[in-house]
Image (cartoon, rainbow, N blue to C red; front, side):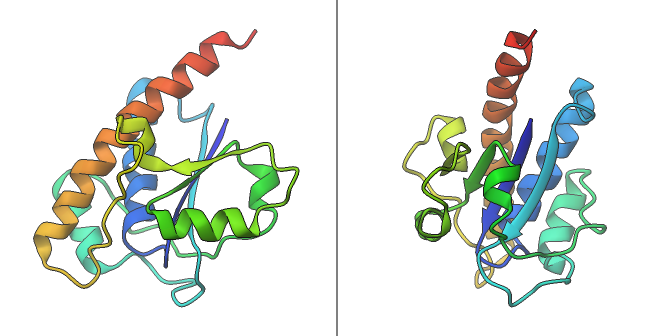
Length: 158
């Protein structure tokens, strides 16, 4: 199973989702069965670490994002990943515009797995510290729902 989290620049929301989801997988003993990555629609931050405010907020919850580096969504991602999950409607629209017609992957909003099918994870980049905490709260909720979905799928496999 392969999951890709997608936001605009890959320095705030999607690396947060990657880090939170990796931790949940490790806690459940599933890290070896699910590949997780994150990327951005744009290329402005390629090769850079997550925003310092993102890293600090995650660290307060015991999540280390220091080893992550931003990358841009690639055409090959549509064939490689089973789930490509956007943080907001604009990112989802950009993803769908780039997706090949024959894509088999699930393209959707990340928070649909939190029972919030039309809700976006807000971009905290231009806001204050509270925005990064809100992102973590939403991402943790979405990650728990996504984990439940993947566990169901993994258990259904022979």
